[in-house]
Length: 312
Length: 312
Image (tube, rainbow over the protein chains, first blue to last red):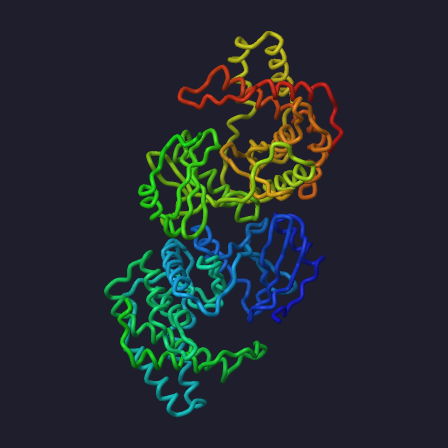
């Protein structure tokens, strides 16, 4: 259950006066979601999703919400934040910064088909293209500087051979620079649970709260490492190829990007291996205890280190 | 049939490269519509409406399209224009300025119920509230100055008694000023054929190409004169009251607005009587020959002149 902050019907009705969304008909807590509190809000106008941000601060929200608004306005499938009568996308509710976004059809899929991977790739490319005119800027808080600073804290807690592998990979990535590759707005967390599908059609990318400005190819590698991952953590060539093909129908990769691809897949695996180790060994006080397994991305990284990639 | 400008599949596919809407699947001309050419455009992302503007100039479009975008962003039910990769809502296609907007469910209704009138009133109030933060400005091209200038050209063409009535009404309106009433963005043409309904729910106001900045109560009067109008051109009290009640659930009318109401209903009837007379006697060259009957609004005006209005 992920309703950490409770909102009552009357309280919601009062807060809704900030908006031009009609009268409140129904308010339902949403069980899924790990970090924030979410509700379905039904008004005389339609259905919306209310998010109460449990950790993000009010001043951190405009980047994410104006980005989603920008992307939705360009036809990229994602929730569109609703502006209130002061033209803001967020304000305080029950002591938390809160926003309303449009409610999308569809559901996430655990075992995506190649066709679905292709659709994800296509939409990701379109998100990258549409992001080009977005004026906001946000550094990637989970980039090379972060993992280089974080890894040394992890080594002492890890088994010697795992620590050696991590140390080696951080060093390897240090020796590869991606500054010359096309960059822009990336989702940075486009896992299967952050995409709603309606059959083979993308009904929306969701959860933009890791979005930032970084190398576009890195976003693609993060997506492939999850969407094409088998249960044994190996990468399925067919789904990986489908995602890349879908991406390239909208945005062709350059020769330099193709050359960087095998290293980028490792960087994307490293990022989640490190963050999951950090969550495991140094859980934030008051944070949810739902920790994802670091081993998954260690295994993905391992696989990438021992094989060549000819998909592109 | 209202496809005045033909767009081919290949031409559309090429133009769609400006957008991040996926691949073109289908293109269908839309038979309804009087002034512009419209197509349904289905892409791998979804369904959109393409409008080719037959008379508006490219520089006139930003006001209307950014207004619709603003309103949609605030949850007011209306089509949301899609921005292209240069962040523009319109560009040239087949020699005409053109735009894509989201495709709404629903259909217009010829004989609205009181519940539907209520919903229209509610949404209109919300449009007025949401419009308060819209920065664009557009004078009303069909306001008192326009009808005062236009009426003298009509008198010689009209039957003497009709001309006398028109002259009298223009004079009457000249003696009433509305500058003190709340003003803002108005739709200015909220007839039954410009609202899509899905049961009793408003799925969208459409056709914003008369929208402008003017007195809000004038917009309400235009809507009541159409939505509450019976076949014999009299006004149905129940539907009029329902529309006003719906409006006031979201925006209460002031004492001054209530006082101005009977005169405003006459002003709103006068505006359409005059424009329809103008279309009849002075059709624009190259304009569509589909002319609406001026008598309807003469009759509405007549009815307003001879009765008192206690609905508010």
